[in-house]
Length: 366
Image 1 (cartoon, helix red, strand yellow):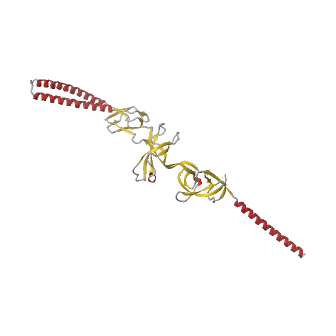
Image 2 (cartoon, one colour; image 1 turned 45 degrees about the vertical axis):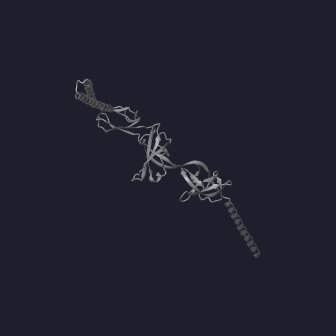
Image 3 (cartoon, one colour; image 1 turned 90 degrees about the horizontal axis):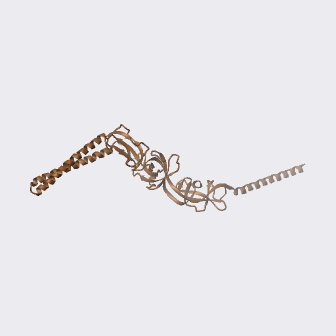
């Protein structure tokens, strides 16, 4: 009986040792499997593309700098007729409205009559002078009479010249009662109506060409040093025509607004289709810098350092092994970033799944 108990104990001990041996063997297999772990990632090729550094802003559309004309009355009177209204196209020198010219016409008629009288008087004095000169040459009259005749003619000629000048002014004033557009363009605002009494310097209407407009926007002082006149800008305005318009900087204000610390930047834009109207709020992306044929990767491929333009990327070699490399970045545009240093043409980088990826990790494309 004792011998049977001893045999049972030996069998149990062997079983326990066998179990422990199996567990140790299984742990070794799991470790070997962990060493061959493959991480699923997305990759992208390093490409040469154009990238731009953009300054984004917004502003209001208006007539081109110096193109808008505010037309004021030059005579006193009552507006009697409106020939063109807001939104209508007008040609240069085309009549837009009329001011009552009855008084001006009467003044012009009086000036004409005065010219007629002065002409008759000048002609009479001219004949007197010719006769006096003839008589003086024959010794019939004294030099004094010839001089008096000449003085009389001179005065008559001067009177005629003044009358003619007065007539020219009267006719000019009469012509000014018909107010014309000084430029070809669109009538933007009509500020008077028929029956309204106006005086010189009263603004009657504004007109401006619409084929070219300006976007007047504000830029923070910190961005001004990056901008220069002539630089390109993409302009996005609301409306059915949602294509970006290309403009260029025409003017950068030399002074800042003391309240906001910003400066006005005017961007000239073409408007041949008349799709954009003054007063529209539009956005602009001004190209502050442009690098052609730059090495570019997706922004998601770069793990950026806390400061500066440094970061790291995971480069995948021909054996599908990821190698972490330090890079220096440049211009960032949208979801792309320029790589100034650290990568070469033909490199393939991990674009998704690189965060925390250890150097030398085996990867597989997802």
